[in-house]
Length: 106
Image (cartoon, rainbow, N blue to C red):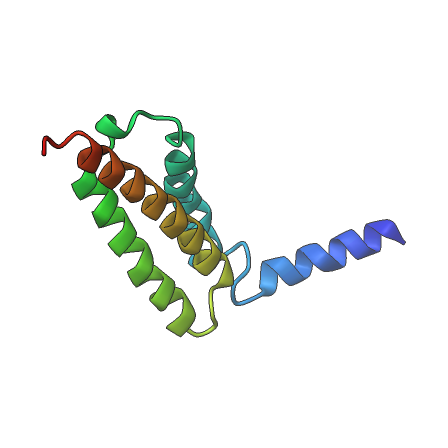
């Protein structure tokens, strides 16, 4: 009974329009690498954060969040990946901005 359920679930994943045979699945899986790399940099000193690259990644993620929402069928895995990355990049940008503001001479 358990084996039949596992086989049924695997067949659904295999034949789904957003299943494991499609770029709707593997694209977001690969993109999680970007989000996880950003998360790994959480403790990186703010002076080491590249403002331009972080801004580029934030723009990239917001554009792909829209794409994930508009594409048919909707790609919720891609949307979640880029939403997570957007939060991480904005956190890094806020750390960088705070660092730059505090090091200024008045």
